[in-house]
Amino acid sequence: MGWALWLLIPVAVTILAALGSWWRARPPRTPNTEQAMQAHGEFLDALSRTARSKERGLPPASGD
Image 1 (cartoon, rainbow, N blue to C red):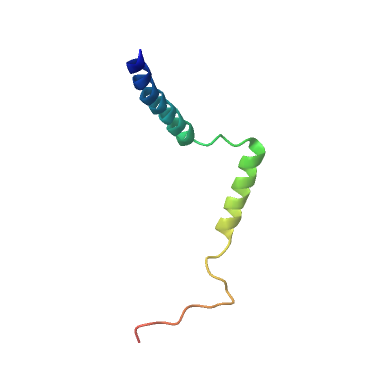
Image 2 (image 1 turned 45 degrees about the vertical axis):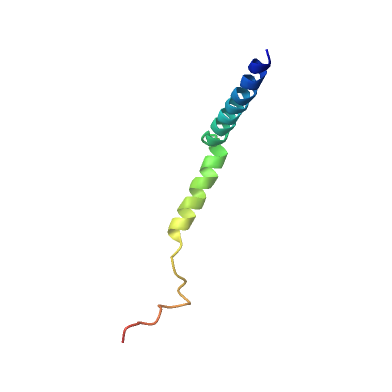
């Protein structure tokens, strides 16, 4: 009967590790409508901003 306990412990730990890995690897939940609309608005705002501020100007030309 002692051998069954020695076999049960590593099997149980392996199963718990597999369940934990599966739980952490699940994809995130689908956002609700309000969250999705907010994320979409932030995405559109990011698209409308310029990549470089107009006040900073262009970087100096190198290689002259």
